[in-house]
Image 1: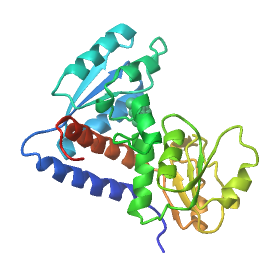
Image 2: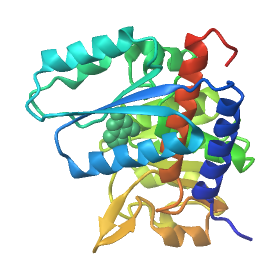
Image 3: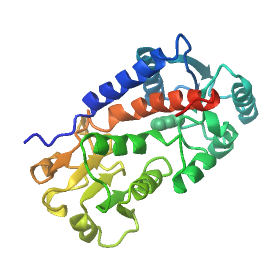
Image 4: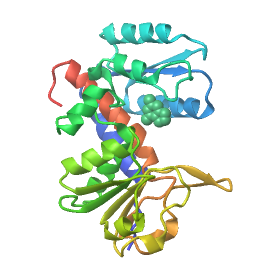
Length: 281
Ligand code: GUN
């Protein structure tokens, strides 16, 4: 049995669904504004890939390349301008930002209805009350993969390893909204192996190469790997891929969760467009 989740294939299917949905807008196109500060190499790669995905599905993308020395005030002023521009439906400020800029102030400034990253406290609050429309992209991509592989999340013991604001915390909330019994583990967790052995679903998002080993999991566990690490120059995740011998489903790295993040961003741009145009989402 093939137990490897094909994230690239699922991402393509969803992007084609979004593309079709945008074609149905009869010539109108959602617009995403991407703001990138400085010359962080990885950020520029992400932004290039975002623009490519926008082009594929039919979203207009405007990218603002800003000097690394821009002041926080000037960045806030740009966001204010984008908030007030009716032609802009989504705003994404690429992270990380330079140290002299307070990330929290920037994320708070973005109009929550244009917050296609789902990072604004308003959208986090909506997620925690199970009312959210704009959900953060990587965790939403993990849930979507489980659903597209017909995993019945309800009542499952789900273990999230990692508690970042971007992945671990929102993911735990999303799994809870899907009626899983959720445990969130982190660096201070005691006896992690006891927890991993109980878990039906394990999602690892800690950035430690090959952290989860076969002896830590139970037979038939479902494994989702959010990690993206380099081990002796080879790309690898947070899950040792030899776990595939025991798992009933597992995401590879690359080609698992990775392609889903930008796809969910495209979905959020369409949702934001619909919200702003009083359409059913
Ligand atoms: N930097 C790395 N990943 C992301 C992301 O998903 N959104 C933003 N805004 N910045 C990032």
